[in-house]
Length: 311
Image 1: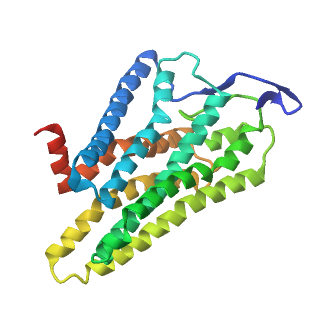
Image 2: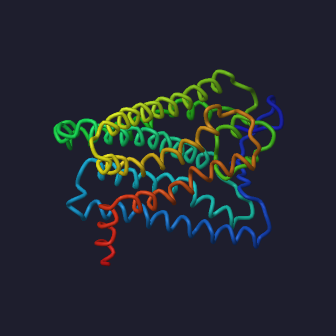
Image 3: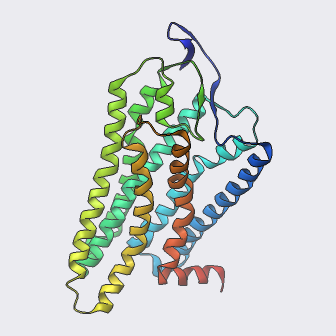
């Protein structure tokens, strides 16, 4: 990885500069305190869900096992960006090394890819539970649940591996400043000495497939769920069935609504400020509010949380 003022004169440098959220020293300290609080609450909220599922025998079902894994994923996801962002708030140079930048790039996108797959299998679980209630215990076995979880992690961590390796081997020209709070493909590709349309097309295609295939799977699953629910004889049964899906649909809406804006075309022109806000929403805000969504709308989870807290 090299950087130069022109493509014909390259020299190795120490890394990139992540501008983050520029401002006065007082403003940086305020942001540090704010995001430190959000980060700690995110860890506590998602960690509480994991503990509640582990300690309450009644929650040892596929639905809650998937939820616990999803909460662990959210902890990893937010940890891939926020600690470095917090360090940058208190740093004067805001430099991130090449290896650090591309490691963050890899883990951030791998964990985001894993989240897309997790949301899809959680929708599949609800489809089986509502559309095939009598066969659900024999269909969604512990072994199948484990295989689905492992598949999500493996697929997620291999999905963007090749483009990230290729981009990491490119030469970078001119400024090494990235006007973002993380190493994002758009700003990185903009700093390369030579445009590589094939790499840009590959990244765009992989992003589109990653977003739309799981999203369509989720939509089809819930269309079948809705059709089955409308056939229920009682309105109470309909409400109970839909309530088990409401939390997941809310999380899907928050995550996909913001991610689709950014990564269908990774080199599309977005204003830097808008890029930061949208990325901040799905990478920090969404993991922060997900535990609240799942806890408030789920009686079993609320009961387990109260038991966990001893109230």
